[in-house]
Amino acid sequence: MIVDCAIYRDGRRTEGPEDLSEALAQCRSGRDAFVWIGLYEPTEKEFDRVTEEFGLHPLAVEDALKAHQRPKLEVYDDSLFMVLKPVGYEPKSDIVSSGEVMVFIGDSFVVTVRHGVESPLAAVRHRLEDEPEMLRHGPTAVLYSIADAVVDHYVDVAGELGTDLEELEAEVFSPAGGGSRHSASRIYAFKRQILEFRRATGPLAQPLTRLSGTGLFTTGVPFVHDKAQPFFRDVSDHLTRVNESVEGLDRLVSDILSAHLAQMSVRQNDDMRKISSWAAMAAVPTMIAGIYGMNFDHMPELHWQWSYPAVVLALVLLEIGLFRLFKRRGWL
Image (cartoon, rainbow, N blue to C red; front, side, top):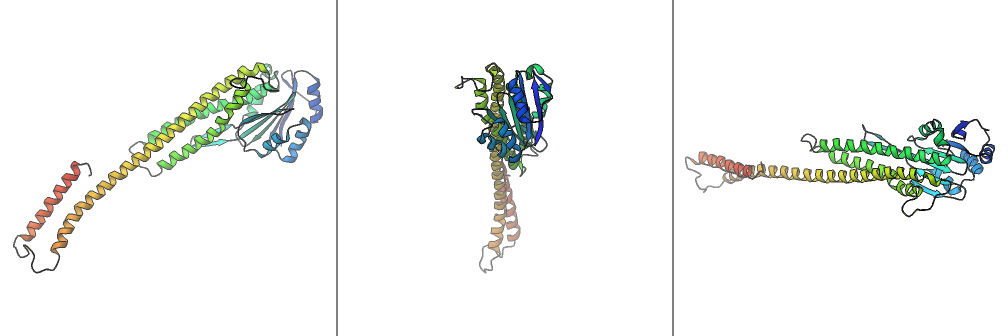
């Protein structure tokens, strides 16, 4: 459905016709004017009208309707299509949630389509309407503001993940929590959330590099002012720092998981040594008692007066000797 539709002239929101064709015609006939339409999870029927009026490419329209796309930037004859994945993080449950924002940019129009709960579009629109100097730059300013808002929130989420990872690390390696059976599953679940975050931040690097005009993409992008390249370069730098932070978090989680599994293996070996030691100490008296429990007539010291106390004393001495031996070797 259409969430918001407005015409902006000289950086300020104005009342315009409800008919999309007439609104677009007015924007194209005048200078410093464009129409911005915002949609939320539109159906194919709802989007047909927008597609027809603005001449959107069918492949881009298909991506916008189906969602579940990687961040990307595609250039068509009459429009520019960009996909971003805003994310949110719930520290209490350690869950990273993501949405999708599709942006169509043309000569005099902006069409934004969002899927999921996570989206900065409403806040971006309100902020731009309070900054007419920025909004005066047209669709380029909208695209930059959306990308900047998404990446800035990436920075916040990366910081929250880092803080929670430090707490998880301290809990896992503490004497109380290190032996928990659920520690490995919690670490692995945390790693999955970092992977979900990485799916949003990693693929966005190339589109922002292209918009900033750096690397292999030295030529400008259609429908985006060349003077905006330094601003997109700043957003790209922020994203690079986020990606470096995510890679560091991913390596640290893997190291924590490996160290925890090694720690658990050592503890299991210690437990096995203790069990083996006690089993050996129990086997000695069992063996001796089993021998003297056989019903043979001719056995050494069977009829000796001091046989019983001598055997008991021998058992006690053997048990003490085994206990000291295992204790000295650290098995007990």
